[in-house]
Image (tube, rainbow, N blue to C red; front, top):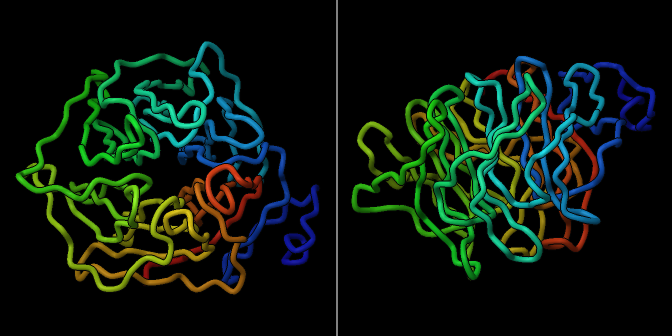
Length: 329
């Protein structure tokens, strides 16, 4: 079984050894290499879905990774958004659709477009715009009623720190109040929904990495800075996912203001005393920035795809890696 992954045999379909303490590369490299794409977990179809990104060119294609066989295939789509990079994306489970927000076109043009892809009909619909144009923007959802985006890079690459909420039933937006205090402006952080609150960690502005973590209480409509022990190894541009079972935010790869890339995986535990912990792995993916990552909740495995190397656009990857994370510590 392990030999299959080490040799990357194209015909391999053996299951991953969930007891092995490390990342496993999958064999299928059908999808084109890219960085800055968005990805979601589609639990009803047991797959990871990827949209957009940049590599040899900016892209607007949709791909699905079957989480049983670990094989990639392209999804049909028409009359949808143009190519873009560094966008937010989340799965609206109640309406069975992928929602994407913002992104970058060309070298540095931020856009304000919002689109939804129906998995039932394989068609795109353009939704009303809400937040001003931005890219390098994180997004999250409760899966049923609301979606959110925070910050990002706006006009003239200005870092932002506004919080916007999308009503998924009506496709309408509103900017949320901040209670008089809010996190510092940032791009490329991690935003997740958990336990009735939003959490933001990491990211950077034009000159520094923002390593602190914040909690937004949705019922009280205010931000609170968390007192966190430890720091993430990658400060921004990481793949991230929420582990609602264990009460943590998972961060894989990333960089530190484009200075150097890392390959580690961190967990920020937000229940109880907030703290960072590195997930030990005997095998790690090559260091990278701007990857996409999901948590396969059915198998308790992280799935990491693609990313860039040595800063934006200087190199790009098309590999896919899987990490069994097991039960909560």
